[in-house]
Length: 220
Ligand code: DX5
Ligand code: ZN
Image 1 (cartoon, rainbow, N blue to C red):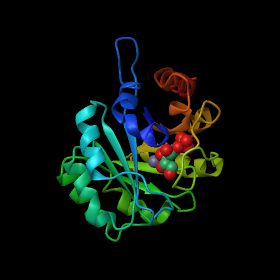
Image 2: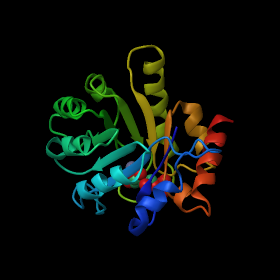
Image 3: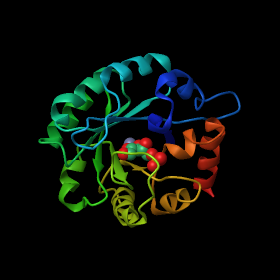
Image 4: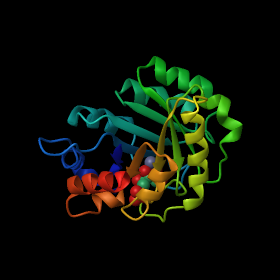
């Protein structure tokens, strides 16, 4: 799966930018549209919030993948699920009661996602992860698009892939940060299911074509 990140899109033209990667007669298109919510507190950048997600939900049929890089997700995450996000991801470093958050997100009808920063290990959170549907492995420090991919996080991907394949865990594995034609194959080999890509999609001349090219590359 490919999830273009609108962080690298033109924020004044979000509906058109979503349409540029949407499925069409001759293209599978984006599987999810990744929406980076930042609060200038958990990360040193500020992007968008609930009103924009609500509008975006009405402007596109692509399932929204909301990545909350915010403090106190315990309070805010459920609102994104209620706004119609398909998957709502919170950071384990920010959540006070991550199991409670997952329960609330799911009760509001969305998939629940847990994200780990590059330096955050997987082991301490395995029990928490059983309450989640998706795991978002960060391959850059969260906060900005266009950063260099950190290959060392692939060990974490391999670890979770093994647990999923042996039936010990049931999560979809996502990776976020620095995914491009040059890095996606290594991530695919390590066992990623869903690739988030911002600059590699919206920095391209034809974002729709870039989505298909990335998917082909991941399969090769
Ligand atoms: C970074 C965000 C990413 C970002 C990725 O904190 O979580 O989703 O958009 O951008 P690229 O693909 O350019 O690294
Ligand atoms: Zn993200």
